[in-house]
Image (cartoon, rainbow, N blue to C red; front, side, top):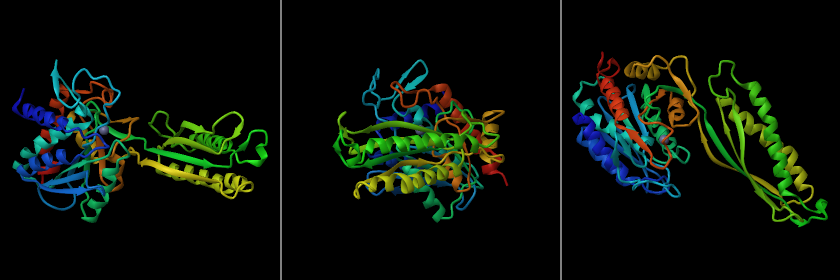
Length: 390
Ligand SMILES: [Zn+2]
C-alpha cells in the first residue's frame, strides 16, 4: 500500500468511528476534519445549524475569490438499526481488500481521500482555489448543503467546478433526477357510516387527491424533454402510503397521503404543485366545506432536492472524465447535493469511490482498489492546469 493510501485508510477509520447518523451530532467529526485541514494550511470556516449540534465545514487552499474547484461530501450516514451487521458498524474492518463500516462508501471514503490530499494541494503552486465542503443532513433532504450554498453566494464564492464524491464506482455522473416528498393531511367530519352525507369523508377526499396525481402522470409523460437520458425519461409520481379512518362503519375523519415526485426538469415541480393546489382550492376544499366549515387539507413538504441536469457544456464533467480516463458520462437514479451547487452556476460532476449498491446496507464497504482510484484522480487534479496552470 502506498503511504498515502495507508494514511487515507487510517483517517477513514477515524471518520467511521464517529457515529454521525443524520439524527445525531456531527461536531466531533467536523472538528477532527477542521484540525487536519488547518494543519495542511487551509482556511477553515464552520457553519452551525440552528440546533448547534451540527455544522457544515467549508475550507479553502490557494487564492481567495471565484473559480477553482470544490470537493464536496456529506458527513452524515444512515442508521444501522434493524440491520444485520457482521461486525461493529462504527469500527472499520478490513478483509480481503474491502473496508467495512457505516459510511465507508457513502461517503466518508471520499472525504478521507480529499482531506489527505489537502497536504499535497497546499504544496502545489495553486493559481485557483481548492475548496472542501463537508455538509450535514444530506440523507434527510440535503439540509446542510441547502444552508451552505447561500453562504457561499453571500461571500461571492462561486467555484467554477464541483466534484460530489458520492459512490459511483468512480464512474463519471453528469445527471440525476430530483426528489420531492410531500405528506398531505385531510381532516373531514366523522359520523356514522349509514349517513355518509352528514359527514366529510377524509379517506374519500384523499382518494380523489390520489386520482388527480395519477392523471398528472400522463401530462408529465407528454412534458418530457425529447432527448431525455433518464430511465424513465419523464418526471415520475409515486404514492407511497395512504392511511386514514378507523373502521368499516365510521365516516373517516382523518386521512393522510405520502407521495413523491422525481423531476427530470425544474418546471415540472411547479407544474405539479400548481395543478394539485388548484384542485385542492377549487374542487376538494369547497366540497368539504359545503358540509363542514372546519374541514381542511394541509401539505407538508418533507424535502425538495433539486436534480442534476445534464448539460451540453460541463467543465467539471470533462475534467474528471479526463482524470479518470473515462470516455463518457452517465446518469443515475439516485439523488445528491449536486443540483444545489448547479444552481450556484457551478459546473458539477458526481464521482466517488465505492458503489451505491453497498450504500445504506448492512456490511457497507468500499474497496481498497476504489480508494486507490479515487486518490489517483485527486492527485492528477492537483497537477491539472485547472488548478496550477496560468
Ligand atoms: Zn450519500
